Image 1 (tube, helix red, strand yellow):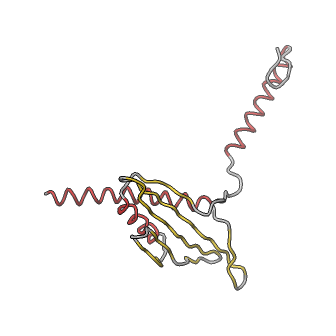
Image 2 (cartoon, rainbow, N blue to C red):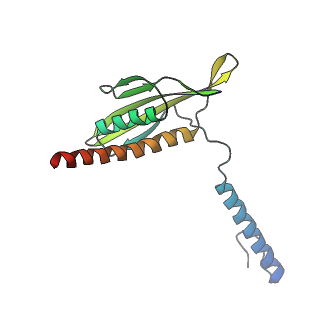
Image 3 (tube, rainbow, N blue to C red):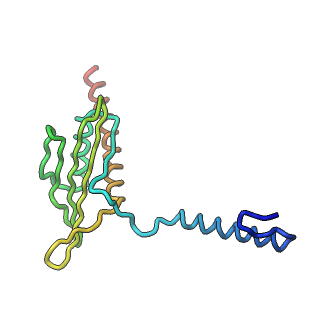
Length: 162
């Protein structure tokens, strides 16, 4: 019998080699898939998600999330659907966000976020690649805040109805 690996399964020794090779390859594949390796960086200028929610609700959620993350809002224009932050500085890094919110249909809203990161290099700041996790964390927080805004809206309606 010839295996997928090209090893002959003659008797005990061939069968054993085949099993060892399969276990080794399976282990290698498992370890490679389990490793995330070095940090992944976004190759895009911005990341986008679409929400099954009304524009006003999502826009407020975006502003709330940015404020909770410690950003000072430099510009918020609901007419344009734009929220821009000031730089949020740490010890050696600083970040800035520009988020665009736009309705795409009835109760559908698209959110596009562009995050800039700069690293302190002596007396100046140099651009640094943005980790994908920064976008993921931001959108996870927006997801949660959109849910909270929905819940608040339901609470207000039930209080008004009583």
